[in-house]
Length: 96
Image: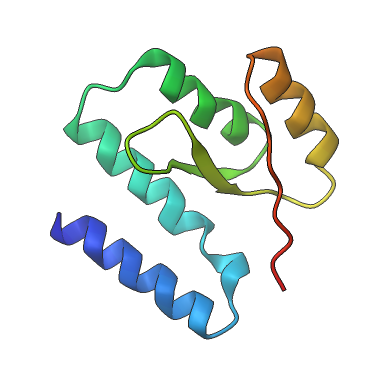
């Protein structure tokens, strides 16, 4: 849990410094740690893997069933299509 907390602090610091584009590595680390610690449902892992195949950094939100990620420029259409193919929805917030 201390490791998860450290990741959160690193992301918080980046966001406070307007460096949100750099949080991807922390999202990936979060998922990798969670995967090492717990057995994860295959359908939830698939949500992460679909995003990663498109170059996104991705992690679960809460207990799984939803993910959050950092999307590379120009990949929005491909991401929507890839998630739609597995029955998932994409919501892309615009953060200023």
